[in-house]
Image (cartoon, rainbow, N blue to C red; front, top):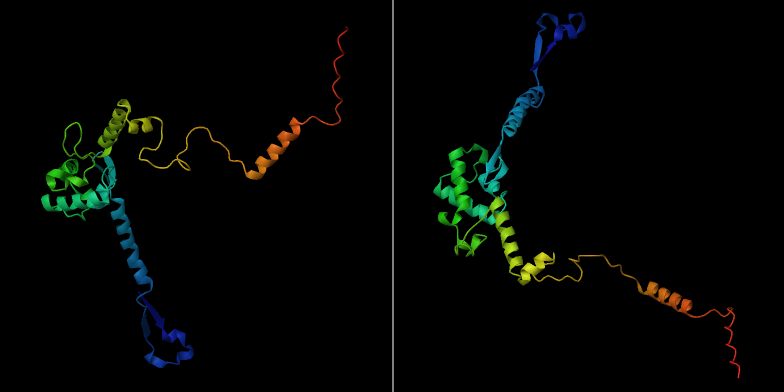
Length: 228
């Protein structure tokens, strides 16, 4: 965009003579042109963000704009350390970069990622990172995620309650299970108020004054002696 200035009309009486011409003054680079160029770029950026979809991964809806590592950490049963290890295994075995957005994967790739999540030991994940080591039903190291983890945890609690173990007893009565103190926290049942020392003394004095007979009260009549 350029600003044009007619010097002949700017100066009266033809002071500049016949050599008067139109001066073209370029606008600075940070003017209107830069503002006009930025607007379509912002629209494109908003369009890319709006194109992100929701992906169903291991029974959970995950934002498609998240990276593969970040998306797996949104699943119940997978923490930051395990998601980091899983993303490395996926990058090595499936040739999918860990920085890839989960929304850009096709159905076959998502199925392959879910297979790695459900059986991480087969893809080089160490057994100390799984959440059920030597599971009592199979005797093998297993890892449960999402709804399977909730169901397995509920079954373990019900089994301990049925066996009447100490852990099951604490679960049954809603108490802390892992040996925490319950003096100040974890209290259940009816609340009991705490009375200060001064209030206790006032209550004790009032109780004593009520127990003593009043001086103004008439003495009790003595019983008359029996006739001889």
